[in-house]
Amino acid sequence: MKPKYLIPVLVIAFFVISVCLFELYRGRAVFRNTALAQTKQIYDILIATRQWNAMLGWIYAPVSEDCPPNPYLTVDNRDVRTEDGQLLTMVNPAYMTRQIGEIINRRINIKIKLTGRNPLRPENAPLPWEEAALDSFDKGTGEYYIWAEENGSHYIKYAAPLVVQAACLQCHEGYVPGDILGGLTIVRNLDVLRSGHIAKNTWTVLLMITLGLLAVAVIYFLQRKLEKADNALAEKVDELNIEIRKREESEAAVAKQTRLNNMAEVLRSIAHHWRQPMNSFCATVQHIQDSYDLNEDDNELVNETLASVIKLSGTIDSFTKTFARTEQSALFDLCEALVETAEIYEPYLHEKGIRLTIRRGLDTVQPETLNLAGPVYECGRFDSCSFGCLDGKAMRIKGDLGEFRHLISFFITNAIESVLERKLREKKILSHVDIEYFRSEGYYCIRIADNGTGIKNDDFSRLFEPYFSTKGCGSGRGLGLYMASDIADRCFSGSVHAEKVSDGASFIIKLRG
Picture 1 (cartoon, rainbow, N blue to C red):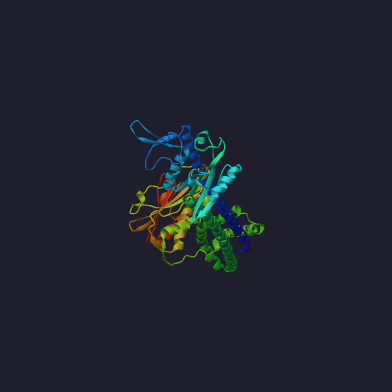
Picture 2: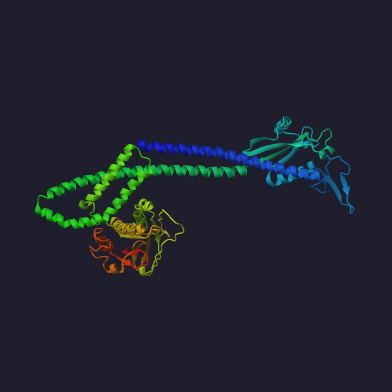
């Protein structure tokens, strides 16, 4: 890669790496904030249930295996019997919190624990990290949490203080309301939550890397395209100089001059066949200059290129070698050839707001009975083209691929000119060119339709006559359709005919497989 193209590549790489690092940092922060917020919600719910229990003056529950009498609760009327003899035991906030914690631990692997300096229940004695939490509460901290990793699993260990309320004094003597009784701790496994955030961050990083690679590929493609354009233009200029010298030498002899005059009309028709693709190439180079921030040297190079193309377009009638036909035949895929040919026009179509579609039509149907299958437009403007084969089945044709491209290019060019002419008169028209391909009676058929100016009824019978043009005086030489029909017949044993449609024009190209 040339040094001048290396700078944007490095900028893209720096941008992608920066975005990936930022996304990883942001994802870690989002993960921790989410885990902490959810854990706080669990704490708030538990505190709310304790307040509910205290508000009711504690509650009674039937004695069972899951709810035996609390041996650490020494109050009057701890156990009572109902009139029907059922034994009930008192459930205070601490006992209720412990039972809720055991249920939650069994269901979702979250450990909930009441702890303090002098717990009534030995199992509530604080662990080292809980000791640190209690120390922080004594210093006025409202919460304490740490992130831990044990046996390959990730946890959040959260603790918040339990403030003494009036109802707590029945069991905890020596305190006054507002004192810190201890703490409520929550140990939560974060593996599931963490895996979700890791997956999201991974997709984001992969997307950024993919976009970065695509950007680099586009830069490389444009570089190669510009280099090929330079080489092609240099070759064309050399051919132009050679041809000019040949013409100058031929002018010395009347016989040679007469022969050149006889060839002039044929060469002009070939020039008509190729001038529009050259104009499309010129528009593409201009599009590159307008779309990319080029330096002074690059702008000068592009301007020289455009000047050479314009000069070449004016003298292209003389290039006999460039327009020579070949007799080589090979198998090629119909859909791929259509798409490759149409892609040449994509920048120009994009600029002019013309939509081009390629689709697979129904097989074994007479071309004359098909309806124009244009796309349904649901918006006021569009600037994209779509190519594709609907069923993916290969349709291979034996013939000269170059001649096939010439044949299709002629109809696409004519369709573009037609819709642009109509667009000048009807500004709000949604211009489109539609290509359908299908099989019918042993032929491969290609239908190219547009919503341009259309064809007059009086012109249908003369469309394929040489030197007959529907574009008016000075706009065409009348050899385009004649040459297209000749290519279809000579190279593919086929034919070309026009259809009468209500809007625009439609042509059917029939080729032998």
